[in-house]
Length: 622
Image (cartoon, rainbow, N blue to C red; front, side):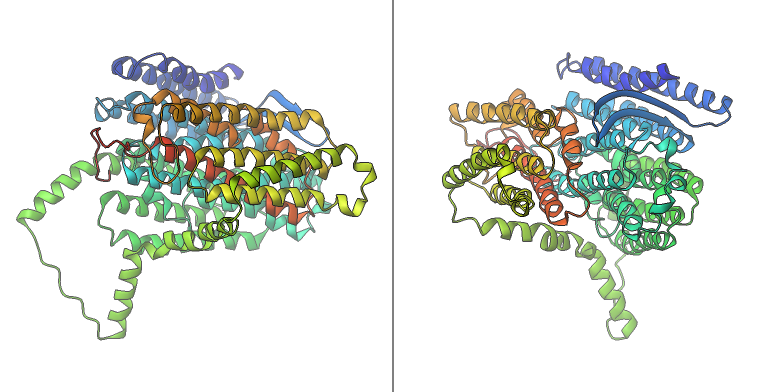
């Protein structure tokens, strides 16, 4: 059994590594490697399913390597297999195989042929980690991979403006889901006092009856996981990102945003259901979210002019119904519903170009003029109002901008009078003062020490806000992000007993990624290239390897699972106590904003149309 689980995870990883050895022109080799990897996984899942059935449908739990273990945190890679995971695994592998075969000709002679297949395999690997995860920490590992690869797949046509812009929109909302997951894991640690294994989750409340009376935890922990599920499954009011994700190739839209990725919130709710099953009010909340999504998506889908958007909102209607089914406790019904909807939407999106061609041809010869709409009666006025709202997709994009991102931009502009040079000088001096205070902390009054973590996390937030609105220099924004991370590390150490090992784990990835990012920016500047953030530079066209190195640096700086910083975030958050809401607020904003700024820097430098304008580029949206 352990061998099968290892094969499932190693097969796409080995396939991904081998693909890097081939050039973009070796299309047949890249395709064959991808197909072999999927076939191996498909056979492994069938064998795993047979063994699971022969074993009496008993859940399979495997505890893997311990990446970090301390008195207050335990980060272990563990795997868990049950019926829900197997159904999702089988569907995901089947559809991924179909898409790989379909994409062989669909992406033929694209400049990003290898990049597309590598992103597909990396996304599939992240999906496997989520579906096979045995604890919340392992699930978050795959969750992060899904978010990162979504950004690359949506922005696959990186020389076009809209795909890049929409990729940034999606990753911005995904960052909210990531932070909700981190906070849910953090709060569950405080609630139970240890890391949660899914194998023990069903009966975990029975051994902690004294905690059942704490109403805050009963709503806060499942509420955070619900928020993560809502964002990832594009539920109301986060529905607008799913149609924007369709800017990627039709094949990636079909497999991920039409079927697999959009349903991952459904799987998350089922997996974490023991957290909220006994809370009947929470059942109504989940049903309410699903019902709102169904109502808005039905109206919006009926009036959209593009076939991809129609399919996206139609899929959202079904996912909203799945949320309602889960709230009723019909988990297996929801999984069967998922399989049917995933297969249908994948098929619809794959044939959508052919259907569109047929409809356009049919319209030329069989055009029927629509009837005039009256506006005299109350019902006619209501219909027209709903029509306008649906055409505008209920202004959800505008709502998110005005009430989520615009306030942060306004806050950043408050520090516009502070020059970047002065900001570095002041922040360096204050940081040095903090280091001295850390080693002489016994001489500082306890009442003051209590507020020092809030003070430094607030200063870090000021730095990241300034980086958020920085437009003149990518290097300045990059340095502000690094300084912010050091401030956060200092805030964590003041908040609890100083541990050099834990701080080193957190900062190791930050320092390495920061240095690599500085080297790439300086290399571009030496070649006389513009690395400001006023517009998209499109430098990946001429410098693909520098773009690849820089994106790795971005992922490391953002805390993605490629450096120890990913584990360090979980370790450091364990030092924040559940009653420190002020400190938690500043840390949340820091973590959300640093991801947005980092991906914006990468997009502005390397994505978009090349500034020279001498290269061929498609201007229209996909």
